[in-house]
Structures are given as C-alpha cells and as structure tokens.
Image 1 (cartoon, rainbow, N blue to C red):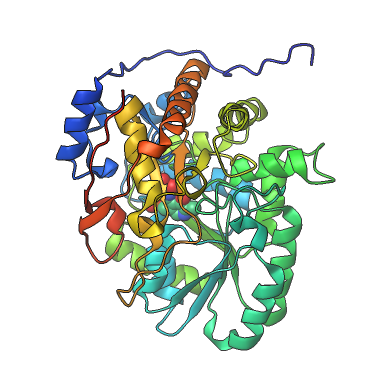
Image 2 (image 1 turned 90 degrees about the vertical axis):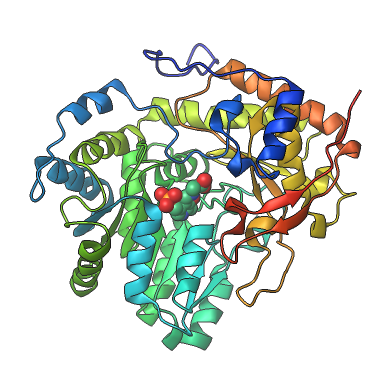
Length: 461
Ligand code: F0G
C-alpha cells in the first residue's frame, strides 16, 4: 500500500460526550467506591478501558438489523439469521443462544463436569474458572512457560502446553470431561494461540476420546494474528482461518459481547446431539426457549451481523494496530508491558513497574487506582485480587500482576490513545510514590467485583 497510516475504518454518526473531572473529584469518587474501580460511576470516568466486553459501538447495519428483529417467542426469523451466521463460521451443528458467555459456560459445565473432575485450559478466564469450580471440579491452567514471562517475545504466547496437557490427560483420563482453549488467551495477556497448537491439542484429545472446546470470545482477533504470524496463512482470509480453527474442536462457548460486536449476548455451539439436548433442557429452565436463549430477537440480529463484521480485514487491521500503537509508545518510554501487545488490550506489568509493593499489597490493584486518580482512566487488575483467593479460602499470589487496558471496539480514536499514553507515562514517572492496598472486606468468590480496600492516596507536586 502507498500510505502507511492505518486509519479508523469508519466515520462517526452518533457521539456520546465524555466528562473531564479534576484530581480532587476523582479522589472523592474513588474513595466513595471503596477504592474499587468496578464500583465507580461510569460518568466519573474519562476513558473507560475496564473491558472490551459489550462496550463496542455497533455499526449502522447492526442498528438497522435491530429494527428488523423478530420478537416471536418460538421460531423467530432472527434466530435463524443468528444460527446461520454462527454455523457459517464455526460449522457446529447445534447453536444455543445465551444472554452472555458465562451463561454458556454454566450450561456447559453443569452438564459435563462433576466433583473431582479436572478441566485443563491454556488459562481460564475468571467466570470460566468459577463455573468449573462451582461443579466441584478443578480448573487447571496449562499455558506454555513463555506465557508466564511478561517481557518475553513469543508469537503465540497463548498456546497451551502440549507436553503437559498430554501428561495430565494420561494420568487423569477418567477425570477430564473436556479440554478448553481460550482464544485469545485473555487472562494470559490477550495473546493468540497458533493453528498448529489448536490442531495438536485436538489430536491429543481425540486420541484419548476427550472433547475439546474453544472459549471463542476473541476468535476473530486470534484469526488475524494467525494470518500475520503463522506460516502458510498470509493469503487466507480471517473467515477461512476462523473456520479452520473451529474445524479442530467439538464445540465452543462464546461471549458475543467481544467478537460478536454486540452489547449483549453469547452462545454455546457443539456437535454432540445428546449433550446438546441436555444443554437445551438447562437453557429452557434458566435462560429461555432454544430459539432465543436469554436474548431479544433484535439482539440475535445484532450478533448475526456483528460476528461477520468482526472478520472484516480493514476492521481487524485497525483494531490490532491501535492496541499495538499504544504498546509501542509505552515500550519506547520504558513502561513495562506484556510483550508483544495482545489483541484487545495492553497489559502493564505492575510487578515490573512497582517492585517496591509486595504482592500481598496488590501492586496491580494499586496501579489501576493511580491511573484513575491521575488521568480518569479505568483499567482492571488481573492479578492477586482476581486470582489470589483459593477455593479453600487460602491466599496464593498470582503468577503475574497485570493491569489490563482493554479497548472497546470502534469506540476510541488515535487522540484518545495519545492521551492514554501521556497519562500512563506520567504515572510511570511518579511510580515511587504509589503505595499498596489492603482488602477491608471481600466476598468468597469473584471478589474483585465488589471488594472494598484501604488505600492512602498519595500526593504529587
Ligand atoms: N471467556 C473469556 C475469555 C472472557 O474474556 C469472558 C469475558 C468470558 C468468557 C465471559 O463472557 O462476560 O459474556 O459472560 N470477559 C470480559 C472481560 C468480562 O472483561 O474480559 P461474558
């Protein structure tokens, strides 16, 4: 191409104001929120990178589709649009709509896992882990060792450790109801999984007769990385690559709030007739009739259109580039981040930035508070607050202490990213003033959503 600049491949039709606040206002807001960014009012946030889930901007085509939504209780046209979009990409026989990804996880695991079982995954997302553990089963993370070293460059850092996987299966074959691979590996840094890794993991599982599923939330971004980085895929379209990825597995759970480009929704898709029937029974009991799941007809339309848009090359090129752009600036300025940048997010290595804060004082949580205080940026801790509490109530420091800056899809522009970079570099410059936090009160599971903290706000000149 003649020009190097990769632009946002859209123009903006509706705008939503965002509000500047002073540091004093933010100090008061975060104190009122118990020093937990999940408990802030969104209107007190300037740039919201808490999550890329359900926060994207829909296209004019999706909004038009929503007006066409068929709200019939059973057999709605919108369901068949949805089913055919999902089937085109995944090839799975049964497509079960759910209100979001974790509902698909709950339905799957409540029908497939029992007490004493083990579920290996490259890295479980927190709701996936909680749903496995809720069954009394063990959620076992089996990433490649490179995936746990934030500074190390590896093209497919999200890969599952095939050697360990095979060993775990050999030793526990009766106790493994399924193996899962999360694409991209969110908790491990938004890192992609190679086609080769999926193919080989699938071959191992097939040899032992164990089903393998994808947690497919960011399958389109994973497809783009395969196109860019894996030999033999540069001439394939993201659509073809996605089809091949799904061809190696028996089913998937999906949050359509990510690469479904929608504000709500998800699905469970699979080939096994008997398991699908069981899952549909649970669906009827807890979500809704199988042709709408937990969704309105207009949501199904939005997903049917959005999931195809997520595979458009111009979109994926811009998407991955905007994350990489922030990564480059931060790296040049000496901010330690997970390398290479992930698909949907930049992960700051809080242990690298704040070595003076011990893991027992949650350095990544402290950094997320500093980013809010200094620049109105909302991020999320992926560290010992999220993962440190064990099912038996004990505390174990997380392998990494990361702060994730997740990019909503099609929402922010390059100048927002430039501002972000400026704030993060400032926080890096004053890092010696940042102090740790202490948990005052927390629920037993998924504590990061509602825990309250003690934190001494630092003062900078
Ligand atoms: N799996 C992965 C890899 C996820 O990232 C998420 C959600 C889920 C499953 C659950 O899907 O939210 O629709 O129920 N991740 C969001 C995040 C919340 O911020 O990363 P859900």
